[in-house]
Length: 262
Image (tube, rainbow, N blue to C red; front, top):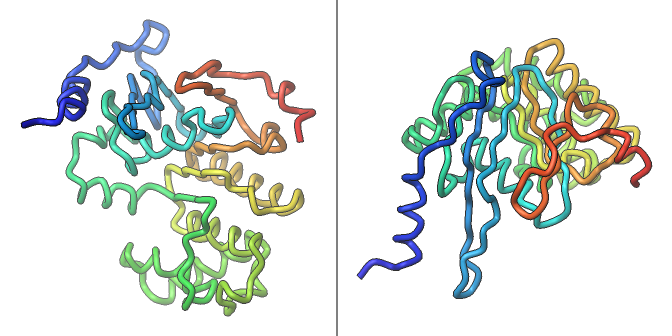
């Protein structure tokens, strides 16, 4: 017998994707997500976390997603980056409809095009800072000499040139976060997804990281989607999207709203 909750979820997937509005016609987007819904089971209940979200981001744009805890920010980032399949809606990233692909093809797409920065660092305990960055480049079939040079350059960019040979147990939380950021940026990704990238950083290093993300966007044409509680980052963004209770409340919030928040 089919689980009635599961049956409901399958029915949701078949909902038609909302049509573009007239003012959006002809525009090219790096990320075009429409009608995104996601629910999770909590005990006997299904909790709607994303309630039909549209998210349109242009190439080279730095977009912050801000909102209270539990508003759906991280779930939205996971859905549009190919990490978590939504229950309904479509995500077109770099002209690729990612949720129409197999899991293996999605993995290959992410490896080739995406850089991820997570709160949890996700570093390997046995590897040095340089090796942490090089391992992703190895998966991308880069030559050993190129891997080493790219890793060194990326770590220098985040002020960690003096830590190339250090393992995570010899680094502070902020240094580990910067290694994770260097790893994400070393392959020069077209899409950068960041979940609270400055949470472990002081003001100075937070500025270093955001300046670097801005450089990636403006000089390399990378598109940056950043989920954050850090109001200091508002000045680095091209646009701020606010989200509350699973719905977008503004697609272009005034940075001044966040200027005095700490």
